[in-house]
Length: 208
Image 1 (tube, rainbow, N blue to C red):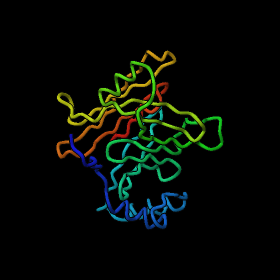
Image 2: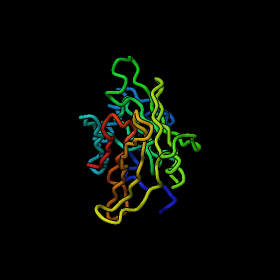
Image 3: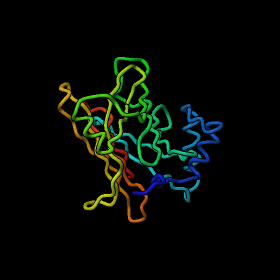
Image 4: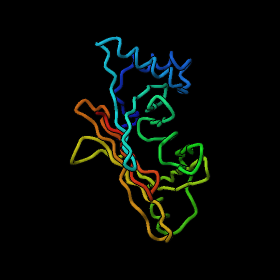
């Protein structure tokens, strides 16, 4: 089990240009700024910006990785921003299909929690070193997960998996999901797969 975050395959000129265009890496892009950025990219045939595909709930959206000091932000250059710390997606903003009845899309945050007082099934998970992780939305929705550490795959594609459980309406019944990170032969990330809501499909971010 490695300690350092895994690496995203990304193009640092793109991150640099994006920081310049957005005046200090605040990642608040206006459409004219993003169009200008794209025109810069098209101006040199030697520059190749890696594109990733975000898939969720039937949505397919091209996103680009922006390297910050301690994380990578996948963005479409507009409102969509997904923050990734090298192991976990930690924040989701502007994801289409969330809060459809609201004018403003909710923001989702992932937070590590201390051990919770709960039923015997959850207590057993805590004894096995499953850690409480809370996904919470700015509109009040939340789901508490209990997640293992990341384990290196012993078969199948190169990469890591993490098992997470959450309660259903019955406190004794658990829903199980598998989060996954797939690597290439150089151990660079090729895909990120994670679930934050047991009632919806997983998020997949994959290098094209």
